[in-house]
Image (spheres, rainbow, N blue to C red):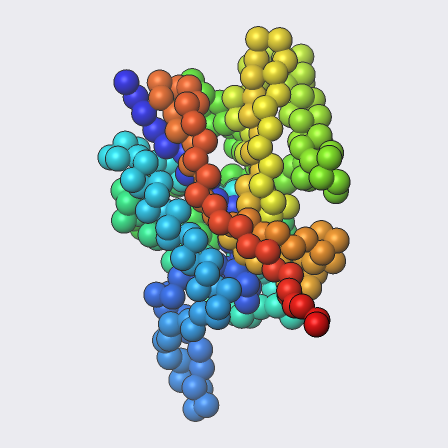
Length: 281
């Protein structure tokens, strides 16, 4: 029996004031006399919460693996970028990349030897996947199997995983949630079959910071699509484009494969309601 765990995270947005931040990261700043010095980031309450969700997810994934291989996929936007500066905790590319690297390092302590990072939105990656490329270069020193991709197709013991950052949205109505993802996946499956290829068994996407999980059946083929929750909390811009999303889910997702078949999807997520509640008497 060959058993592997595919760990999936996305949209960590290092350098954002509400993004993932490893408190042990070594950052660089300048003294008043011009000298450079090193320091650790001081996490705000949201960052402390996210770091707890994340490290708990890593621990749960490691326990699930129980010594079997963990393959990590990061679904894009590892950094916040410098386009939208009003919500940044770190403005320099150097510090954002340092945070993004430190965010991924805890997986190495759990024995991860394979890592794939997807290039995300240009505005969050210093244009055209630059952050992802820099992270890959830094991780090469660990001598692990790491690749940076724009759109990947991973064959894990015959189980096909199509992964990219951008894809379908979650939908804007509760009663239509998942419809767009299913149509997207069905179309992808038809295109693959029309080209004489096998449809993927799993489609992984990110970008929308909301979890969507749907199964599409087409003839003898079954394809799951999973849009990952983020490891970042909303800022003013996010509230605008999501029409004031208020239930936020964050975490790590683990796909358990045995002999090339998906046997379970483990969601190590937490959800919070960010509305301010009060009672007027």
